[in-house]
Image (cartoon, rainbow over all chains, first blue to last red; front, side, top):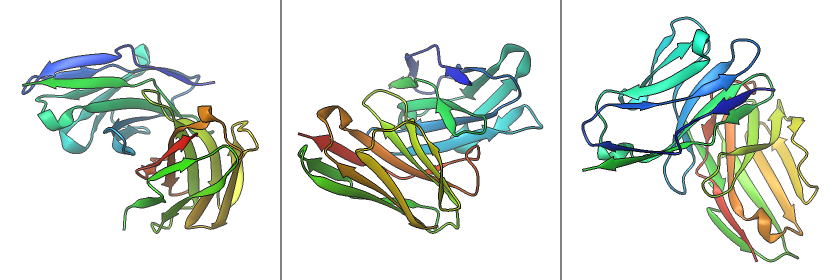
Length: 111
Length: 113
């Protein structure tokens, strides 16, 4: 079965600084990979997805992610964070039976 | 219309009550999902309907009963719930299959007393 690991439970970043959120997956083949963001009490919004092709994926709100097969990673990056980016971020993997989500990373933005 | 609409947004029910959660989408998607999310936890898949047929049931207790009346609607019928069932219930849809990008509703925050 597939699994997703987000090693950082909380990350604090200063506004304007760069951001990288880590995600590692476990699956026998190349899975479908996703990053979602969730604000408190809200549903999840898709930031970006990787199915195949170019390993650097551009998403909404200035986010990008890079798929690295050799490291089984799909890390999310943003060059300059805004206070509105404070939220919970979930990495997810799809392998034919619905998405499996990581435990999430809570992003805190310092002024 | 790119929204998934869930009603009600909040629900409080007793353990002997029967209630239903509703979900609607008009994007022409043929797969619809129910997820359960406890506070500070990731969403957990409960059910998947694909082309109006139940395709995935993640061993959810029978006190949760899904229904897909048509391709745009998804219901979750609740009966004799337990306090530990209190959670945010999220509905999602995707164009056809379980590995595509999901569009989520805002959820129903359920409290069982």
